[in-house]
Length: 477
Image (tube, rainbow, N blue to C red; front, side, top):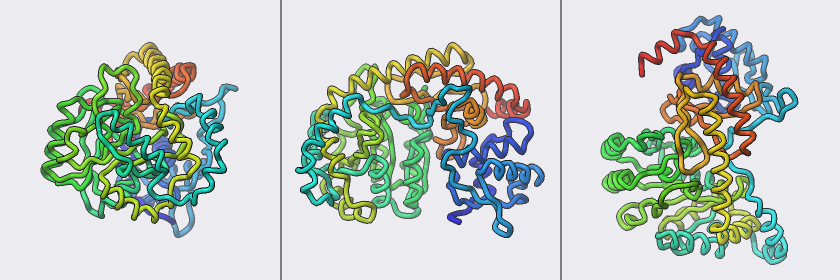
């Protein structure tokens, strides 16, 4: 058994779980969703029936029936004397590969398909394989040509950079994990947006960070009053931000937002980690800002994380960190505890791709524009009560639902062959029950079909929701 979750913590994760009758099946679906999106990891011991019943203010019979339903679908197992434990899900029974002979749609991952020219670049690099494999393959800093290419790109964007300021990693998540493990000690305060990229939050928590959130919305952007208070009162060690095409909202920081947050971080002595993995996903932004904090680098400690996962292909596990030389050296020393370097062949491929990004990005922009326009139009036509935001880049729409039914909607859509992540998946302090992330990285025909599935699912979920739930929520908001 790997861990245990308390009844109070599980209750907070479940949020507005009582979305339909019977209550036990609504509770079971709530736990299923937590397992499916890994907010409750495999091997986690669930609370005892009596304990959870008390926390949720339901009968023990309701919890017992929910656990029985979870056992029937293979999400948990119950052992005498050991309680109930969540199970690994290779491919859970609630996710059909096809429905009615039509292939299912997976929109849980907001990642475009591979850039069409990638195969040609791979073949080009493979031709020089003998030269590549002559190297040792163990290099915790990265291939010199790739680091220079990345540094040159930063310099052209208005941030003078040398290759000594670049550390190549095995993807952006590896970079975030390395930074968290080196810069965050147990109990340190860490500022993070909410909603946010959930895997970054997980890495920061695992390093021992105590997350303090700053809200960001599609309409109003970053809550600057909250941000100023958080920096001044908590003096955070680190802040993790996505200022360009923030995931999942798609919002980009305005100049005044950048200035306020940079000033607050500088006064607090906070290291700012800027996630730039989505920064190049421009569709029709009026102007491209210089890199976050480029004009403040002498006063503010800004580190940057980038990768080719969103611009080229998620399966190309090459990322990087841009930092001062001394920080790069410190990270390189610590890295061997995590891995011994990025694969040489992938680095050689990445070097050519970085050099060609100016040709690749317009093609990505066209793909994203097609998907964004298709799904936005379909959602507005089929679900006029939903508020679909306008975004000028990124990978997804952060949709506002008329009722707090994101989790049950996602579970219902699964049964029709549509896989999505519910709004609470992206929260730091819970909530976002009225939000749904809809990526627009799939083909337009799939996105239009997804909108049709959501229309039918919404009707079922909205009709079946208890009136008390909707009235209570409306009174709160």
